[in-house]
Amino acid sequence: MSPQGATGETTTDRSLLARIGKKDEEALSALYDRYSGLVFSEAKRILRDAGAAEEILQDLFYQVWRTAERFDPAKGSLAGWLLVAARNRAISKLRRKGGITEELHENGVSLGVDVESHAAQNLLIEKVRAVMKTLPENQRQALECAYFQGMSHTEIAEKTGQPLGTVKTRIRSAMEALKKVLS
Amino acid sequence: MPEDEAATVQAHVSGCDDCAARLAEAHGHASLLVFTVKQERPAGTIKAELLARVRANRQSEEMNEWPSRVYTEGHENEAKDAGKGASSWLTWVLATGAVALALVSFGLSRQNRKISAKLEQERKVAEASIREREQIEKLVGMLASPDTMTVKLAGMGEMPNASGMVKFNAKAGMVVCEAENLAKLPADKSYQMWLVPMSGAPISAGLLGPGGHAWGNMWTADVPANIQAKAFAVTIEPAGGMEQPTGPKVLLGAT
Image 1 (cartoon, rainbow over the protein chains, first blue to last red):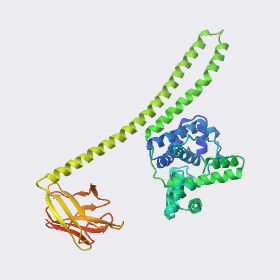
Image 2 (cartoon, each protein chain N blue to C red):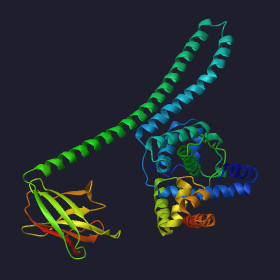
Image 3 (tube, rainbow over the protein chains, first blue to last red):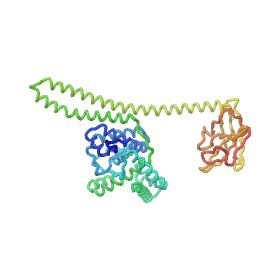
Image 4 (cartoon, rainbow over the protein chains, first blue to last red):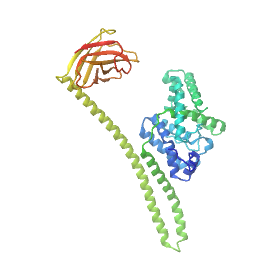
């Protein structure tokens, strides 16, 4: 369910963040309802462990609660930040590296598309999946290795036995295809 | 990206708005991959724990402000009401206790969730072991039963050197097959076993090989109980099997 304002419109992330900055628990609850599924699914896909994914999910939203006032919407979207932060933490856990804790005011993430309602998220799911189906298998695999396993281009080249240049080209081509979703 | 390279990039983008925007965009495009993932919901308890945690955090922050405020107020009002400061301190102590309790509760809740997840995993392993044991008992019982008949299968068509043996118990509706010298099939094909009843159309008795229910080098399948078999056959079918035989017979044996 998307949180609705008095006008019936979906409450924006920006207004929810402003309320969270003033320690409004309902706003945090609404933000959690909006993005917890995406964040959890992403972390679980990487870690293959629901418990570990739930820990990352909870820690991220707790961080939003504590530092909401530091988020600068001009730098990027909150949804994008949540997804990248969840991914980085999950990869860090997967590769047993030290803890990563991006701050809300650090690097922004421009998602370039509205995902502030579940309807918008579902639409994007359809579009992205349709594009992924059109990708050659080797491009899709290279992209997934990089994103979901945190593998460097060199590591992917070693794993697949392909030249490094080929791996880079595959990932770049796949990224170009993904960008088309936004156009 | 190697850590040193990442540090160089990070150092650059922190002072270059243009590159920071490009990096933000690249992160955003890559994040679209999340939308290919099967969407799942976290356990409902996670949200409750999160809200308990933020409440504890809020109370803790309020606590940090109270001592100085209470101290100041205490001094200002000392002459008027000496007992008021003590009362405020008592409130502060109680509130601190409440925060500590909330934090302990949060920690226990998280621990409890981990233990529950582990128990659930162990329960599934135990259930799988029980199922496996039941299957073995059922198989041994069937093989030892005087009601079980043995049917020898002979190779034919493309595979004259193939052979096999079927153990069939009509009462239990259970078929066990062992086959030898069957050639390896391409990925889009499967061997499928058929029970040919005394009357009516053949009944699928499962796949041999990948996709079938294997036990060691034997394949087992359940068929409807109390059907008398006239013969057993194995055919080559599209991967996953068919409702009725469509491909060439490679093994056949009459009861």
